[in-house]
Image (cartoon, rainbow, N blue to C red; front, side, top):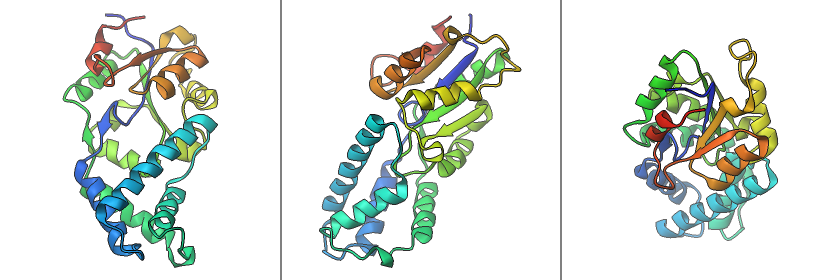
Length: 234
C-alpha cells in the first residue's frame, strides 16, 4: 500500500462531531445570562443556528474569519431584539465559561475508525499530517485541548485554525499556509500530487484543495468513510 507523503485533515464532521448536550447547555447559558427579552430556549437555539450558518457562509466567501467573540455578541444582540449594552458583557468570563461547557460536554470521535486510520498513516514513517480547520463558536485554542483528550493529537504534526491565522477554507491563502508549514526536511522533494486533503465539505475542502493543486477526498457527507483513505494511493 503506497501512502501519500502528507495528509491534511479537516476537523469537524471529518475527525470529530459535536456532543448534542453541548449545544443544549450553551443555549441554557445564554437563556439564563443574556435573555432580557425572555426568549424561549427554542428561539435561542434557532438564533445560534442562524448565526452559525451565516458566519460560516461569510467566512467561506470572504476567506477571512469572524471570531467566536463576535459571534457570541451577535447572538446576544439578536435574542435581545438588537437592544443590548455590550459594556455589560465580560468577554474573558464568557470565553472561559464557553470553554468549560465544551470540556463538560466533550466532542466525540466521528467514527470508530478515526484513530486506527491516523495510527496506520503515522506508523508508516513515510507521511506527515496536519489539521486544517475553520472554526466557529469553539476556538482553535480549545480545539487543541479537545483533540489531545480524544487521542488525535499524537498523530498530528501541526494544526492550523482559521481564528488563529485570520483565514478560512476554501481560500488559497489558508491552503498555501498549510503547504508552507509542512516539514520539508522530512519531505525535501515533496510534490503537490503527493499531498491530499480530506474533509466533508465539497466547497471548503474539495474545491479549496483542488484550487491549490493538491489531491482531495470527500468523506462522511457521501458514501465514503475515513477507512477508504487506506486504499487510496498516489
